[in-house]
Length: 78
Image 1: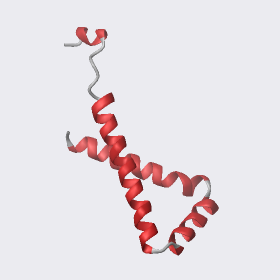
Image 2 (image 1 turned 30 degrees about the vertical axis):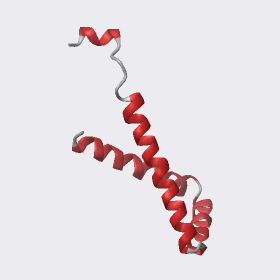
Image 3 (image 1 turned 180 degrees about the horizontal axis):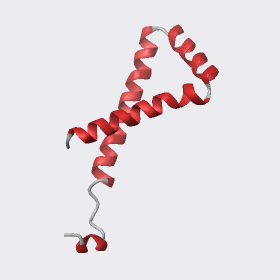
Image 4 (image 1 turned 135 degrees about the vertical axis):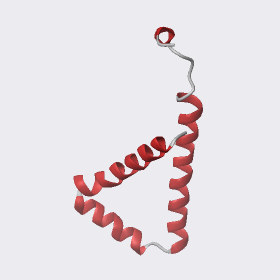
């Protein structure tokens, strides 16, 4: 996996992170205020849940979708 894949992933994260503030700034602001009011233990659990969900998605995509058998159309390309 080259740097291009990592940069594409970073770009996707930035696009997804920017969606809510762009579409609904007031909801984003309210969510950030609620996050600021959370105690450290709960905030860590939210972060852990997010990391586990992301890791599971990466594993699923790399195992199940990226390494599927080639299409019959691919035979003409090789």
